[in-house]
Image (cartoon, rainbow, N blue to C red):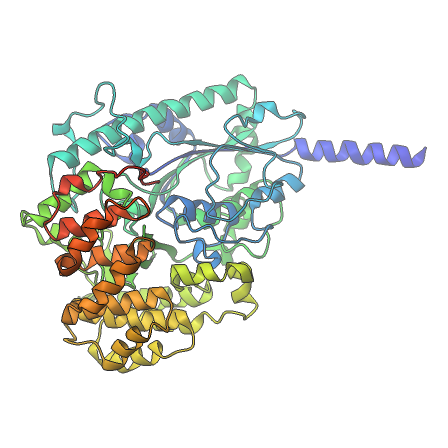
Length: 625
């Protein structure tokens, strides 16, 4: 009898403990910078979110660590930088450890966890026990035990880039903003297509605000509003050219509004309402939610909680915020960035490629195409607009207090040398601290899947990532004096190090700093003894220096099945003309993939009109987002 009474007491105690925790609701929109009126947008009104902000906490310096959906969500759900997991390559689906999902820890603590309905964690498979329910019908109101606290995530895609792209046109109803009233960012030319896209995107923001209002009303109707902490944020920035997919503020800066009901205001450990200028990013969200729920934070998490008393501890004070990107679809163009809130430093590794490297999803924006066409036709007069189409500099350095649009690169300005060097040291330190496997070339890291997840392989010493980081930094420098070192990298036994040796040589060739590829590099290409990504880089460098037909023939021979090779042919511009006839024939071959890039090659060679960029061949699928 005593045992039964003890079990009953324990059960009731656990029930009381579980009920004495807050519900937590995430309302997540997509591809949206801080376009809300409470953030100063005068083009539209967002009354529901404005009220949420007025009663809660509005963060002014919240950022997605990544600039594309799947690596952003990978970071969110794990509390680990995607570059440490190898999930930074958009749509690469790498193995991830089963315990790297924070809802698991909430469920173990008695929470009912639902996701409606986007996961997109860039993993091979999400374990079945991460969510109680994860689908389009998932709803906290349907939990069997109403005494349980819940964590719920609802995703709304109306602000996604698909709102403005041509093939999936959703421009219906009256405009929320007349084209003449649109504010055009300083880094984009003021073109009709740019104004049109922004106008329709602002309409999507208004509709998204209405969705938020509906979610809050549902919460009140369910009797849960007074017990629920609400987070509202976007998965990354956008939707304008040089927004989503780039580590500028326009790609990383997101709105973040958090509302606490009176019962749980003490968990904020700060005055409410308030405007909060603290640097916070997605890597902090998982530990923050666990902290609010009173759940111990796993040691593997990189982030720190920004609420509860834990946030007041000195070790939780983040002096910098770290962001990253990996790919422009089939073009691998990694960048890393760090900011202290005022100054921002970007390190670009792929020195041969411009930001305006075409890719098959973002170029569907009419604004992006219009900017591209204006550049091709020589109609861009401002150096700011032209820079997007020129090979990137190794470093971009901005004083955000004076240049929030990031158009004035101060990297060479000696008056900023002290702060530049401070940020450079901090950024490089972060690469080694986080064991940045994002600097392994994409296809090669995919080949390691059978060995296990990259995080564990690096942690256990089966992959030595430090030499890869070393090589990537040297390759980004674009210095002729580095050629001997780049050749040493090319001869390394590590394919990732070899890749950066080839990349560094290609970057020098692209801008004419070397007039011929080293003989040993040409011999290495001819031997075909390296992985494809190394061979492609060597071939590209040979094309820039000697217009090598052999290199072009090699790329054409694999372009039908290799997105990297097809993108490389696109990136060499009109130097692909000697093989244009062969590429033209490939467009009619149903077995050939990557036709967007092949059409792009022909457009570069003036053999197809630009309007054919998305002219789908029979059986060809539309690009995914």
